Image (cartoon, rainbow, N blue to C red; front, side):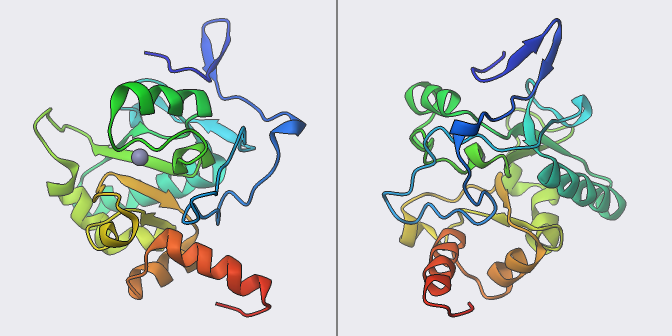
Length: 209
Ligand SMILES: [Zn+2]
C-alpha cells in the first residue's frame, strides 16, 4: 500500500523534495517536549529511498544521513549476530500522520508532532520475524540497546520515560541524533526529548549542556 505523500515517476516511487515554503527546522535536534512544538508542513531535505531488502511493507524514505547510519548499524548487527533489521515505517508526511492518527493506532502522534516527520526516525522489525514475534523480545533489540548509540540512534520512548512523557515503551521506534548525543542520552539515562529541550534552552542562555 502506498501512503499519501509519495510521488510517482512512471512506475518508480521516489521521495519528495521540499519547496522553499516548507521551512527549515533543526531536524536532528528538534524537541517535541513542549506541547506547542509543531513541525507544521516541514519536509526534510535529502530524503533517500530505502532499498527493497530493508523494507517490511512498502516504500520508505529517510534522510541520507540517517539511512547511511542505519546501514552501518545493520552491518554491525549482522556481523555480531547474523540478524538483519527491516524498516516498517520511516519518514511520514503530515498527511500520512493524519491517516495514522485517525485510523491506525492510539500511539500515533497528531500531525506535526511526530518524530517520523523529521526523516530521522525508523520503526524496526527483524528479518524472518513472524506475526506473533515482538521486536522488543528479539536478539536484534537486545543488541540495539547495547550498541545503537554508536551509530547515533536512540530509543525515543522507553518504560522509564513513560512517567515523564505519558508515551508507552516503544522498542521498535528509534531516532537518529548522531553519536555524541545518542551516547550521552544512553550513558546518562536521559529522556531524549527532555534533553533536547534542555539543551536548546541552555544554548539560548549561552550555556553548553
Ligand atoms: Zn514510530
